Image (cartoon, rainbow, N blue to C red; front, top):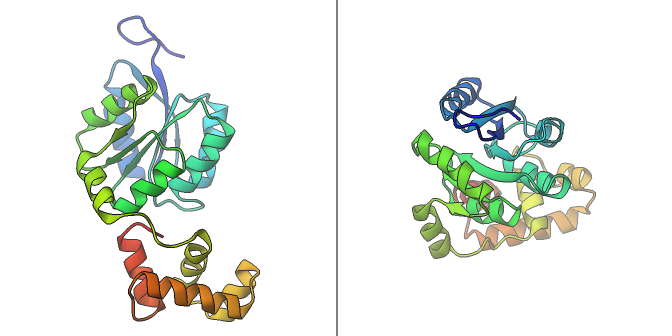
Amino acid sequence: MSENQTGGQSVRVLLAEDQGMVREALAALLGLEGDIDVVAQVARGDEVVDAAVAHEVQVAVLDIEMPGMTGIEAAALLRARRPQTKIVIATTFGRPGYLRRAMEAGADAFLVKDAPAAELAEAIRRVLRGERVIDPALAAAALAEGANPLTARERDVLAAAADGAVNAEIAGRLHLSEGTVRNYLSMAIQKTDARNRAEAVRIAREKGWL
């Protein structure tokens, strides 16, 4: 662990972001902070846990939409594998449903990327002190929105349908019967107040439920 300008220990940070320019810009901005040291960068969600363990990071800053695995999925695995690492979700998509899912996965902070870099740096310091940091506007929206009405299985089936897969393909992929797939899709369409599965996918994504 490197020392900062005041002689204290710098915070070891991992950045997970699939857009190279965004990731490098964040790393450069955080690097200007005297007490933060970006020791690892990854572009895929499925690389988060191994990198965090290998570099003994104290705080992981995760995007949500990444190849291999979402930031929310990576957060849940990281919380189980290395519980001492604090998790900050920093995303372009400030959706109430994402906030709820991130908190359920064990995230300590949830920020949108249009916030100033100084806010991210301060969030890193605050989560190390044991605080929860949530964008206030997003927290209010999440309370107004209510809980995600979709069950885990309904989310799985709806996500599998997102690329246009037919029921037989979804059933094979998820090891379910076609009848069960139809039932789950029907419930998802009903709960999202959609007319069809494509609209259900769109609505669920917009709300951050998927």
